[in-house]
Every structure is written in C-alpha cells, then in structure tokens.
Length: 319
Image 1 (cartoon, rainbow, N blue to C red):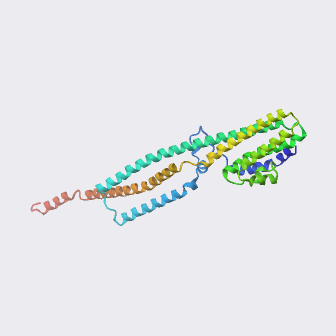
Image 2 (spheres, rainbow, N blue to C red):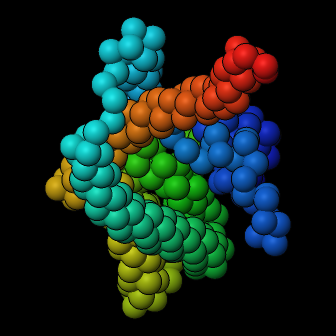
Image 3 (cartoon, rainbow, N blue to C red):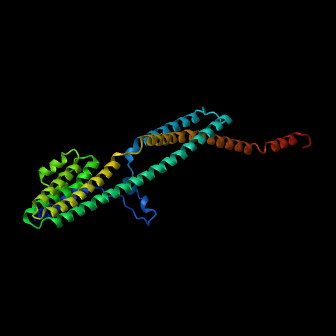
C-alpha cells in the first residue's frame, strides 16, 4: 500500500511534468472544412524553423531582382522586348514547368511517406501501451498473494510504469525530467535510468530481473513458476519489438538522394519564378505605357487635318 499511497500523493506533480513535456497532437474537426485551416493549427503543424533560411534567401533574391528591374525602368536602360527575348523567356518558362511537375511528384511521395511513418509509429506506440497493460495485469494476477511477493511485484510494476517514459526520453534524445517519475522510482533508480546509455533497455533488464526474482521467491511449484515467468518474459520480449520499431522509424530518415533532389528542385523553382516573371511584367508594363502614349497622341491629333483645312479655306479670296 505504500507504493499506491506514494503514487496518489505525487499524482498531480507527475502529471504536470508529463504534460509539460507533451504538447499534444494537432487535432481538428474532420466534418468542418475550415477547421484544419486555423492559424494556430498551422503554426503548430509546420516546423517553420526548417524552411526559414530557404524562405529568407528566396525572398532576398526576389527583392534584389525586383529592385534591379525597377532601377532599369527608371533609368530607361531596360531594352524593349524583341523576338529573341520572348523566345528565351518562353523556353525558361517551359523548363520551369517541367521542374514544377517533377517537384509535385516528389512532394506527393514525401507526404505519402510521412503519413505512412506516422501511422506505423502510432501502431508501435499502441502496441507498447497494450503490452504494458497486459504485463501489469499478469503481474497483479500471478503475484502478490503472499506478503513476500508484494515487494517484488511492486518493483516490477514500477519499471513497467517507467518504461514508456524511458522510451520517450530515448526517442527524443534527452535525459528526461525526474519529476515525471516522481513517486514511481526512488532518486537512485531515477538517476540510474537517466544515466543509462539506452534507457528502454535498462528498464527492460530491470523488468526481467524483477520477474526472475519473483519466480524464484514464489511458494508455488516449479512448473507453475516456470510457466508464469515464461509468459511474462515473452511479453517483455515483445516490448523490445515495439520499442525497436519506433527506434527504426526515428533513426531512419528519408533517402539522402531523394531529399537532395527535392530540395534542389524547390530551390530552382523558387529562384526561377522571379527571374522569369519579373522581366515579363516589366516588358508588359512597357507595352501598356507605349500603347497608352500612342492612344493619347492619336486622340490629340485626330482633328488636325480638319483644322488645317479650315485655316486654308479662310485664307482663300472670297472665303
């Protein structure tokens, strides 16, 4: 009962520490079309620090290119658009279209792989929770009927509760927070787990050790003790598989060649758009200004021949 009492006394502080380390999933209402477009969800769902440098570089290039075009326009240094320039811009635009098509396919594949990895990791996490619950129920069912088994049973349950925290710490590459295990393990056990190179394996070894000691201490027959230990040992082995699956996903990024090609195409597209569109826009403005000037000139001199004719008729004798 001391173990349960300690858990209840430290429940609020332990839950607060765990919530501080877990932001929670990005949730939305599937039946609401606009719910997934909320700004607060977009800020949490996207890692903007990853795209900050490419975005800033592309923005700086666009600003510099726009400023250059504007300066050339003000100084009248921008040459008029001829057939060669039109063909050059058209060929560049066609090349950029193929880049956009390839980039679209690669981005679609990347999104698909991200979804597959997410649901696969969720399956392993669900398997881990299922096995921990099964181990806890087996431990409570098989052990604890006698007083000498209670201490070993509680020790086994402690490491079951600490195991998900150790997996979280290992996958994130951090030591962890002692307050997350407050009331579950004592200070020496917490420090031993946090100083371990592989925290999940450390917890699993402690589980096996506790299960073996329980099977040796039990007053049941050797056959029953061996069968009980085998059941618990098999479930502990399954925990290795669940943790290993998440570890494999966490440590296996997308292929380097694929990521390199995708980022290269994205950079080419982001750089090529202002280089192609800004000269076209400048030439388009030149044509509009030229057409507007011609239209004003035609309107101004439209009645000039009639006025000249009237002047000539007045200058004739008898006119």
